[in-house]
Length: 276
Image 1: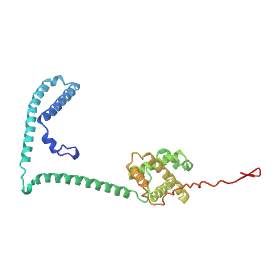
Image 2: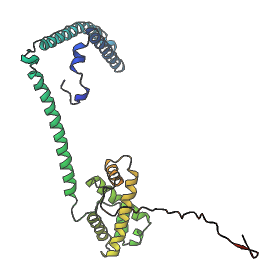
Image 3: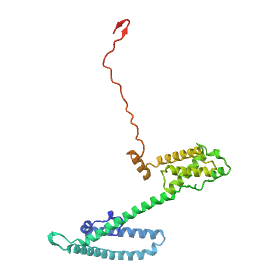
Image 4: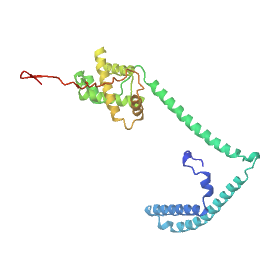
């Protein structure tokens, strides 16, 4: 079968051993189902009465086609059995399976070709994503509310814990993740995004201002990644990597709780001038 999903193809043994009665039963059920759908479609299209004669003629032709299908299936099994019986028995009790090897090799080649193409596409996609994000980040189209605040220089609305600031971070997160498929920006990329924000807001690019926006961006990406832990493959891989400690940095400090040894020697105390 020329199917892309090779795992769902019927194997040769099952096809060869499938009895003719089962083939006839399958074809009969499919024929009745197709006939029902045809009459149902004609009925709701208002042409059922006009197609009664055509349907009856189709029934007769279908009966004739059933006989042809049975004959074709029988010829197929006969030809397959003849092909299997014509395999030459060579010396040392081995069969000549060159014909079957060629077909199997073709299947292997197709699987390798599909796999190599998929790997190539994934690699090209990753390279393409990385090459798109340049050193100079350009902000996407901003909502009207944000543009109005920028045009009137009302920068106070972009301070911490404000709706305008959250809206701006939402727009940037959507742009970076959709356009660049980037959920884990590095320090250089965070710096580039913060620089673009300060430039758009007409704020002096100082270390303090840049650090505030970088921290805001990190918090935004971290919060969104927490929501994508169950559905994002990239987040799951990074989480698994951090779980096994395959990251650069100092390992976590292990807190060892030490318990003082129990005092076994009884102490003597003075009680009303007497030793106890």
